[in-house]
Length: 308
Image (tube, helix red, strand yellow):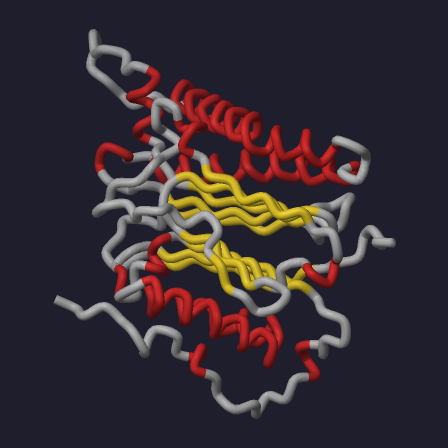
């Protein structure tokens, strides 16, 4: 029997602005405990930032805000997933209807903001088409919802979802078969954005077999490494450090890690993560402060991009 209302996850999150950027185009959020009544919802969004996407920092915030509402509703609906046929219906909704509803919500928010904050224009200027307005707010999005019985994640565009399973296996379940070239990526402002949303579906049949670490990050982190192996090593090191020192110690140094990554990628860099409580875990304040340094303390030294 699963007891509701117990905090099952520790969370950590931070974001740093890229060097030379006019503002941070990323947005993120972590809300909830992970119980059936209060699902844990994580999200990161990365506004495109170019001149043709001049309001993308707002688009990223709208994406995260709308995802939080939709995902929390979905997570609470999963309380009844043990009923016959319920899990299948939830999966169908998550795959087909959730992306459409999310994109609809985001577009409605964007067009509403445009109407309230029209730019000053000369008399007789042409009213932009809806697609042109949406383009100004273009953003990517990665979001996840965690309940005692279900872990589901969605992604459109670049960025990374990394999962460390209960047995230590590290996966990137939403990584595309082919990486986007250059700065091109799928976007919520695309004409059929819902069709580009990827989903990861993972029912939790035993609490002990739930993921022990879930990491969402914008591409400012993964781009700071010369290859995907560098990013995987970072996540593995993060997992080890969390196990050794707890989330409070890592939370203190996370901004430093992200600033270092941003210096190499040149981009805004954002990470949110959830660490599952395990039976027998030691409270963070009880961990020895003189524990030996772990390689994850300097996660970008082993395989960094060469500056040109």
